[in-house]
Amino acid sequence: MIDGVRIKKMRVIPDERGRLMEILRNDDEIFEKFGQVYITTAYPGVVKGWHYHKIQSDNMCVVKGMMKIVLYDSRDNSPTKGEVNEFFAGVHNPILLHIPVFVHHGFKCIGEEEAIVVNVPTERYNYDNPDEYRIDPHSVEIPYDWELKEG
Image (cartoon, rainbow, N blue to C red; front, side):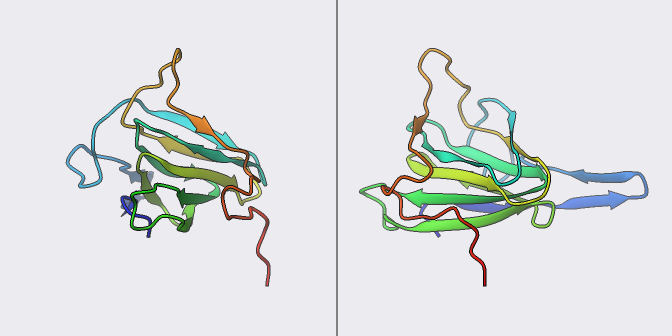
């Protein structure tokens, strides 16, 4: 696994009324600090990526549908430089994925309905100077193909 990436398996508590799932608590080992909470979505087959942050870490949890979340470590000083990780997250695998600074990430909706991601980054969004650096999802800079791997 890419250095600094952490996973928390979600605890789902069902009863006859529905279910409860805590995503991130301030006493979790994975918690660093709070910046803001937001949702982002993707429609079936849509890829949103690549991007990375220089200041904030992300804490992503897919709360509706299924996403393939892919990480790429381009950090020169990292013991896992060049490594790619795939995570299948959502209703069938409820996890919280901690993505450290400078790790490229993106996701693709792999279900038949819009998927929803809750993100709890460590910093709030700066509208005047966003901490977001983008690369085309099909760039050869990152050794990854978003196409379905059949077989």
